[in-house]
Picture 1 (cartoon, helix red, strand yellow):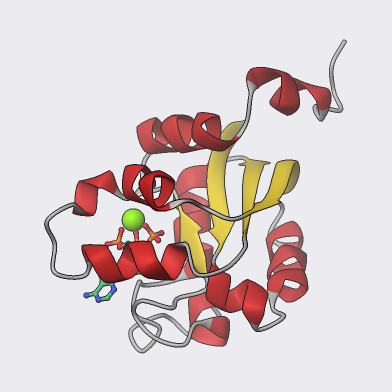
Picture 2 (picture 1 turned 90 degrees about the vertical axis):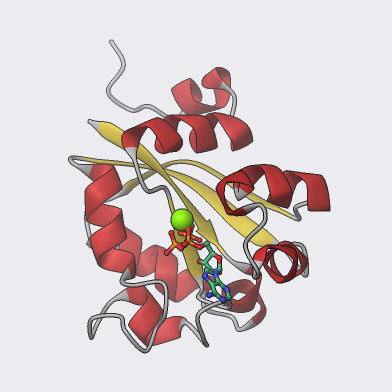
Length: 144
Ligand code: ATP
Ligand code: MG
């Protein structure tokens, strides 16, 4: 089974959509392996989105991601990385397929409700950014 990282972003927490989004993720077959409600510091937001350093939206993105609490989730499912990207929809909710999480809950291209890792390598990096190996192992049900 594969892991991926999701972040319910400040707009969705503020808007009271966290429960609906979690419900959807579980309905889509994801198991919640670790979860933390936290607030990112500016350096943390910068590290998470380091690939976008220098882009015109980078500073605003850091401000947005530090503007309120987020819910970080380590999720397990078959084909978790690719499947979660499909379930969240396109970055811009105006372009997102109907029924996707962003089509349902995102406000705009920046305030778009949820983050998902975009590759298996980034999933490993991002899961370990938030959670220790011990935190991940505690929650595995099928251990021998
Ligand atoms: P995420 O990485 O959060 O899952 P994504 O992979 O769909 O989103 P990226 O291109 O990685 O999209 O952009 C990261 C985030 O930066 C977006 O989710 C959005 O919040 C913000 N962002 C991206 N492009 C723009 C833009 N043109 N204007 C404003 N904000 C943007
Ligand atoms: Mg991305």
